[in-house]
Length: 345
Image (cartoon, rainbow, N blue to C red):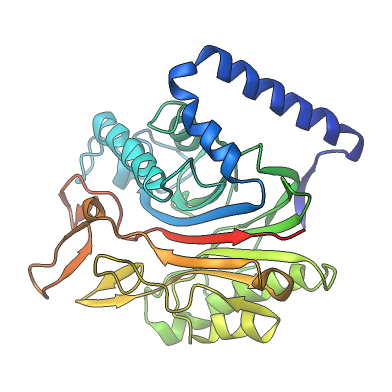
């Protein structure tokens, strides 16, 4: 591992007290908005909700000279202006809020986010600004500047350490996204090991690019294999592969279980992604055996405002931000994947 960040054991109690103090401060000054957090706090004593979401290019509208992000600038063909950026930020906030009827999700694994600016704006200046989220994210060598992140509720998940797991590129493989690893403690004292991943795409063909995705899975397994056999592990993200693909099978062969296999929505979604009229699931959540019995529900969020009619193939599909280069004010080309956990004493 590299860039590992630790909260020192002697500081853990102080950290929890500090978070509680911050909560009380927030409550006393923002009474009109506190019901969201109160209902979440009351409902999460023995439960935890995880959301996985590919944001479909959550880029700010400013140029990073070290990255190939010119496609997402005001003068680009996409005309990615500040107003479009802010609409996108609030749209992602709306998606996250739609994933839970009471309170807000405890953990949100985000894929395709550009930088800290986007995460700060999402958690502090969007529809989520009163939800109380903190976040951790990677700083990857991806040429476009795409990273992954984890939003968390401090009262239900207290990070103990985190790391960016780099993936060594194979020959002819361009640098890919780092894997975010976060070890944290839940409200009831369980320790979770959370990995957020965005595997390389299939651009250039599935078979030629298959080794690239397997390389990412090997990196995950190299870390998971060092954890105790009783470790409670969650691996979530966009794998750019199906449940029966070699990369996902590799993880299952090494003790992880794909609890999102076969997840469906209630408004027509048969997966998290639709291509050429066919529903597919390339977003997945896998857990280790000790956590498997705690999974009580897995589903795709396909509330109507996240869908649009598929005029070419029939049915519905995710209401994405762009259709080609046509801006249509949608949300994402992926639907959120939700996993509910319940922990027993």
